[in-house]
Amino acid sequence: MILWVTVGIFIVVGFHVILKFVNIGKSELSTSIHPMRRLQHVFTGLIIAAIFYYVTYEQGKIMITIPAVLFFLFDLIRRKVSPQVNQWFLANWGSLLRPHERFDSAPAAIFFLLGIAAVFWITEDRAIIYLSIFYVSLCDPVASVFGILFGKIKISQKKTLEGTLAASIVGGILSLIVGHAFTRNFSFFFGFLVALVAEVIEIPGLDDNFTIPVISALIWESSKIFPGALIS
View (cartoon, rainbow, N blue to C red):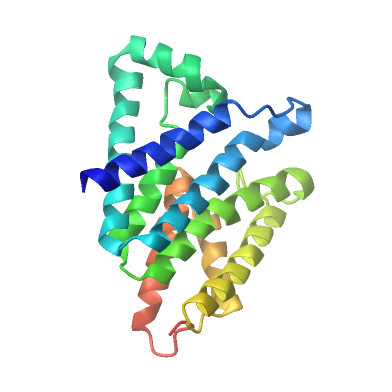
């Protein structure tokens, strides 16, 4: 168990070290899209999914849950307990944070890890776990980028209709890909709806990096109990 926890922590920290040294332009468009944060979401999710392919469900559960909890506790300490730790953290990782994440709220990356960890406690179905990881790591960045570039119709303070539909389309495509990989009858339409609902639902006090994978996993898992559900 210690080995898999160590591997999980090493991968997450190592990837963020790489991101720190990636030089991306600071143009107005670049600043609006936050490319480093989008890359962080995409590649962290893909790395977790890739590693999960080679380990058992229990190993994957341990690898994501314990590092997620440890990072969450560290974040509480640096924001609430130790100004010195926070000063060191901001000096090294501040470029990846939004202003409110420096002192007031946990970074989106913490919610991202906690959300994926929660998925492992909701279901043991590997196909659903993969879909939930992909929804938050791929669909959500697509929603953000499309919303910034093409969004005209606001459906909430942070979301646009155009971005949400783009994310839902990607969710439908991902359901077909994962369904094919696991020989499951996952439909585009149901995957589209799950991604749509996960994107639209906003729970006060919870970051969507947590709610998107959790809601996705709950819907996919719950759909198994209904006759005629769009998964098999």
